[in-house]
Image 1 (cartoon, rainbow, N blue to C red):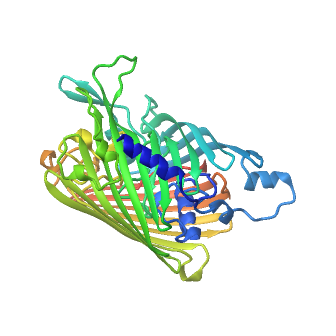
Image 2 (cartoon, rainbow, N blue to C red):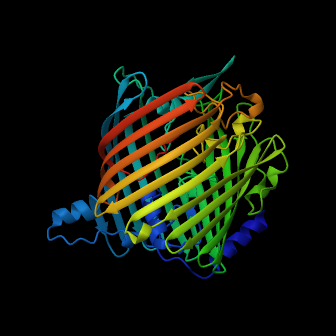
Image 3 (cartoon, rainbow, N blue to C red):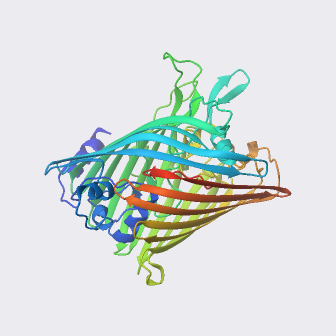
Length: 527
């Protein structure tokens, strides 16, 4: 092990250069899609977030309108507080989301609201160090099916008869605190703080640590790792070599939100897990990349004992633990393919898992079509995802491919097929968006959609509530006025319709929401 670490150090420092600058690009879909549009295949890796050294996105989306007064320049083109020197820069802006709306289902009409207040800060020291930090306090209410999803993922306390579930977990945010409001029965109170620091070792090597999110792949969904769950402490190492190769190593501390029965602190701690991933990309041609993924969840400590980590899993080798039927490791392997040609980005993922000695395969296939029919900023995306029953799960439910009781890939979990469609048109500061998701699910019920899309139970332990196949359709339309793309400041109106059919059972929910937001994180509520 010692020789391996020495070799890594020598490999990092005694090399040539490829990157230039350091700032991390936001992971929110607006920035990711613009990155794909302008960078084409300049980035050899589909491991996000990327950085300005790979492709200078800020220049491509820069507001180039000319103003003759300082106030409109500040409002439309700058952060609220902005200091930029030759070897130092810092930007500070508010991070708010104020919105109000209504939710209508088959029973009654309920109000919706978002009330988020926070601060965003980023900066750079010289050409090597960069940092980002966010603090946010939130009170929000959601539709019935969303609230049920969040409560189903609440933290667990050990009892003599099993577990007691309390509170809830909000995707891309945090676990909730107690919130009592008779007017807003589906309201939650939650807060979070996230940040990351990046250091450009040289032009080929980069390290980053913090508790922000990551995403692997060029699709709307990822079958390897997505930003669906909550934030978690991580360490990431990126290395490019031999012009055509790019390697990423990721280590994250993840949690089962199960309180340990005994603790020395005031608040009982959660059970720890450790997520490790290796991602190796080979640029076959200028417009064709093939990437190999191996990753898994290690159970570090449960309510009974601590578990050591096999040091071999840290090595950039194919996931042998997947074949060894380890009782404390749940791993997957996969292949990612990206192909870019004349404004069309084709992508695919194939993932392999082994559950109860069965080898299972999940798949993704999609297309981004930019500037459709040569109409500037008219974009089209279509994507197919298929994840079989039991995928990502384990006979030991504590080893589920999850963090904070949420899937770290697709919000639906497993046991479904999905067709996703998205159409976007941007004109000046306006953006018009419409999307459609169609899920096909085997078994389940309309009020507990996640029951049969469950990472925490394998099929031999599930109680099938209904044998009929289910179908869920989600239609979303949005009108956005984006007045500042430095921190994605928007006025927006959103309409959403969700229709679920399971045999003779039918449920429909319509909702609308209008307000102002600074959107830097994705939150997937189309499940």
